[in-house]
Length: 598
Image 1 (tube, one colour):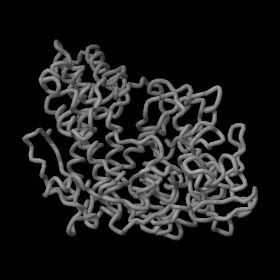
Image 2 (tube, one colour):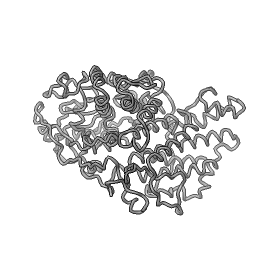
Image 3 (cartoon, rainbow, N blue to C red):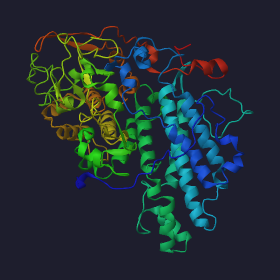
Image 4 (cartoon, one colour):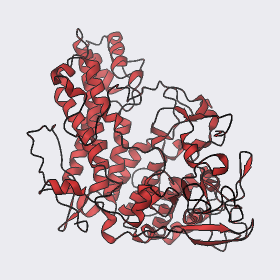
């Protein structure tokens, strides 16, 4: 195990004891303002707790949500808001909205930035005090950039021929503030986020953690000079301000990843004309996240890290692999399994993968199942397939623990398709990815450890491949020493899939490679809440509107493919861009709604 583990100490970034009373209260943080604001920032622990509210409001989801509104999966929960969205996405019922929570987090951050210089982190040591203040500022700027990226992804859209972003709040607001603000153009918002990331990088090292010499990075060297090159004093103070206690909080590596996400999104067809961001820009920043190791640094378990139970059980404070950039803490529970195990394993089977997604997985020889050379046998549809399919989807007839899963109509008791609303599968499949088969929901109940990748490296390999193909074609590499073909070959080799087909796709040109990359991204990142936003940034209305399909077995070997019942994908053209919350537009006359949502 040691060959792929890095050992560090995990700091729970949301250790603040404070909680939010209401997300609607975006300019009066509830608990803190029971105290005079100067009193809050008179004690460093209160100041850290104040910033901790931004971590409480992190935008990451830890199981499939937005995917349920796509062609990849559906929910058996009739009240699920993402299920309703596919059939009727409304400006007053928008599960994609980030408005209240992101602006709430930004309000906390702005107040913190306005008062951080008043905090005495170290009473008798001015250099150490500056170290803590610098770390705090870097965190705040990086967290503000993260929140603005998610706001832009959710709410950017066209108004009268221009693509507008969201209001920019550089300062905190109070009851006397003018809330009736118009929306700036997208480029101004992107520049603001990039500026915040640059500020973050000027304050924070790539990674938090203890160092053992004053040449470890430019930051410790700078502070050592301020100590008159007293290396012992500099190391002691640096490891207090930037060391193990800060791991898990914002750092330079996280900020660079957020920038790469922003640039790939902004270079995409839905936004590129207004953003001014090019595919070359996106390739550059994805390559920066990947680093000097390039393809050689690809984690060979990056595609199925969630199957490595030994590692999950041994997961210590801050333990990482090369696949993780930012992850959640470790927790022991059975919530994921309770939600998604089949009924026969005492679960609720909430997330049901579609036949559409299953068909997107190639054969193990790399050819799509529609290609005559693939060897696909329609009578045995799961034999010889890409191994990633078995990691992600539970299929009819598969052994699951001690149970053989039956999703066909010939199962009249537990897991049969459409057997009982809210319990059985609606597609003939159950979710497998991220679930632990060694969890037992029966008696005796057995819970296991889990974590979640907030941001992981495979996203940037795929982002680089996408941008490189658009910028230089399938075999072009710019100045980065790797092409789209190189990256995709490594990804498929890692998964145990043959790669000859990639060469054929590359020979067919950029358009064919684009389609291949989009499909590979779908496979690798399935159920990780990327699909809905990818289809929209690509302006791929065909897939956005694709009817989810099910497989219905009437016996162990006989089946039909049909549409999922009572499911729809009624996305209009303008829904490439999401709405501004209707309630906000009703309150503020200068806040323009995106075209089509009026």
